[in-house]
Length: 436
View (tube, rainbow, N blue to C red):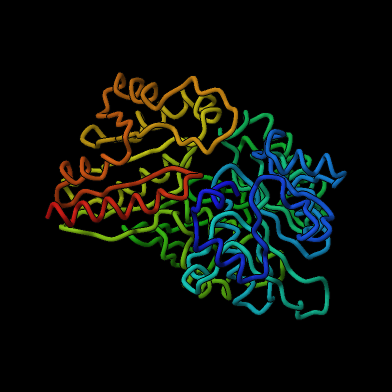
């Protein structure tokens, strides 16, 4: 992680080093004799050929493999539940892990978003080692199967799950082709949303959904009751309550119920684990309230996730309140690809009295062409009649938001990839306290 070379994320570095991981600079020095023999260099799609470690590995004849190749080995050697989709993967992965664990199956975990419960224990939150399976078979493992870089097509899980299909890193037809391959490589049952655009993978799958749609689904959420901080629903004769608000979380939980039922668990035994599920870091996570203004931190970054976050925030408002939204686009390529859809999402889901700020696009480094700006998105949203403001200096934003906020408002911080966004949400809370 190049951030370690800049002295960033000391807590994460300490957690890794406590686990026995040796951190070396990203300068190719890992090939030096004092670090011992290296059997391979694992890279993600974001690691470019110009990275010194890649050049050093090639010069030394060290094998280079994609992270999905290494993950595929773990998936194949366990009784794996792999969760894919363009939205909700981390939450559903966390829900399934929590249910299986609390029902005694001792699963392992490999996911993107950190479970708040594990973070509270001082762990990184997105990994857990499996224990022995109670039936003596392969250990259970719950993994998030990513479509953004195509890694899910390498996996051969015991159970596959597809949550939804929307616009994110690739065109929907390209993602659907990956879902077809994912389904074909799944060794056991397959769970899919009862959505029309998933017709290619629905045939013979265990379907889930929610009223008023999905009448053919074997697992269908009904009697849905959404509250500002919770959600309640029923699947069959079993009632469930979540500590996470929003209709999208009802769908997430219904997918988890459908998946865990394939592992032999009864839905009635899943109610307590789901009720106790603490959520995922930066998934509509409340940072605190000052003077009647609540600050919420959220990972939303694609059109569907932004729509869900804004809808949930509006459901949290007292009469007369507004959503004061901050969205930091991540990456010039993704922003360019999603430009029109992002403009449409904000224009459609912001209320006329809401306010939206955007700082400049987050840039993590590399050789990407920087030919688009957050200002381009703001201009398009403003033309659609919404109060949208560009602020190139994010350091100024907290005080601007505090000056705008009034009791009953909700400040919603959204964006992905940039780990400093949570600290920024806390800055907003501090600015509200200072103004008060």
